[in-house]
Image (cartoon, chains in turn yellow, orange):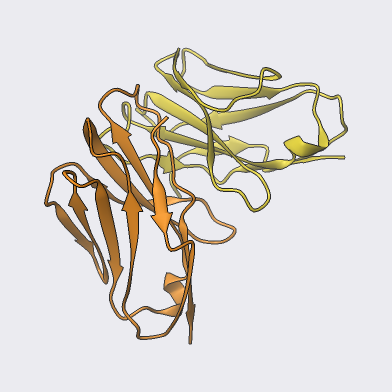
Length: 114
Length: 113
């Protein structure tokens, strides 16, 4: 158990809908990362938050947004869902910016858009 | 975004074989390099974080070396076991980035009993 909790584990929704994925980082970790793994693809970096502020942005679509709350949990909001958004979404946390410290991954949320 | 390449893409070995794979990255402004192991149906787990040129790290039968001047890191597995079957990811970070961890596509290792 990495100490990072993601909910829900599985989500099935229809095209055009909006969903929210939740991540609770390890106790004391200030940095949260979101990744997407689509079929046969590697881990695609979406966005990073550090202590409530956006720190870095990757290949995140405009239909997606995220935030980190004062209690340091983070939410990834996916809207106007398309079939191609079906993927495994991982959250990871680290004490600071992971430059020199490892990141710890949650078990992921499997999103299926039908 | 940092350009990272991992080779080979996949590797099939027999139990007991030793193997190694490569992570290549731009050598300028190097800050740190991460190695992760990702088993099927699980989440990635950190193996090593390396920061200094010439660093060598070891965890059981797995070890890694780092050459920041030429921009590469090797991961070695001695006496591969079926439980070593996984995808091995590297993520270099340069000093100019804000802390985001960009992963390579990984090397998928399959170890046959």
